[in-house]
Image 1 (cartoon, rainbow, N blue to C red):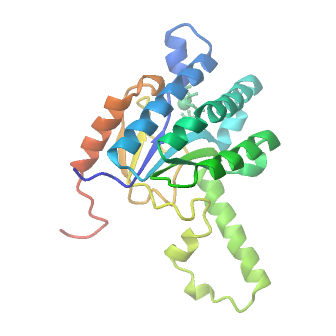
Image 2 (cartoon, protein in one colour; image 1 turned 60 degrees about the vertical axis):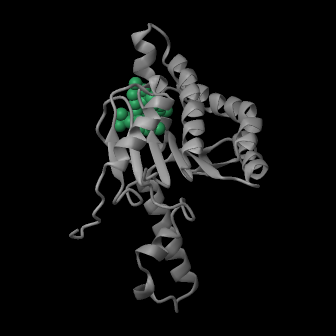
Image 3 (cartoon, rainbow, N blue to C red; image 1 turned 120 degrees about the horizontal axis):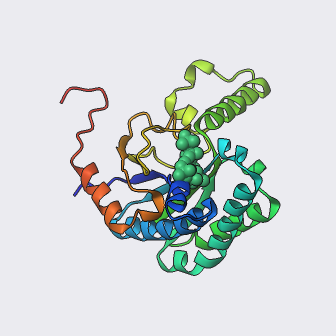
Length: 234
Ligand code: IPE
Ligand code: IPE
Ligand code: MG
């Protein structure tokens, strides 16, 4: 089977999952962590090289403070609990996003978990935190402009899509082959705007806390049947 090298998931539907059960939205987020664990295992087992998870968007900062705080503390708790499992399964943990908006505690935990899991890794788990596609393209353009200002001999004509990509926050991570979104919504919600140019999209109706290993396997099967053409004639 043709296994995608980079699978990305827009993990959506935690709030609806909780509402259906008469629970607080935050209970849905807590259960969403189990789906993260399940999909990380399933991806590593299938031989996926990069699994990126859209965990918190730049726009999600506009949610009520208690919800934001719960999401951030769930992140801290999950990082504390999963360090051994990540190491055992040879999964390198990485965070991509607007790190300046994260707390000092969260930032230092991210750095130490990244360092603790980098050796002998077979898969990279990229948690997209305080990320948005427009933020990423904008920060890349700003960094490039800054470089041009510092170095007036920089030949702008030589900047191509590949070199521009190296300014993105995802530098070093290949573009996603497959982007899955749960919960039935069919939109990108400011996720991988540049990197997703040729990604296969898969929208599934299940809410994120209900999305398990079999669903991940089914997504890989659906991907294997896709015919990627990149604008060419086959
Ligand atoms: C996804 O679930 C988690 C985050 C965006 C942080 P939601 O919280 O968006 O759940 P719904 O879409 O309201 O059901
Ligand atoms: C997208 O979900 C962001 C994440 C899953 C982290 P949202 O629930 O924030 O997106 P919208 O508001 O439905 O577009
Ligand atoms: Mg949502």
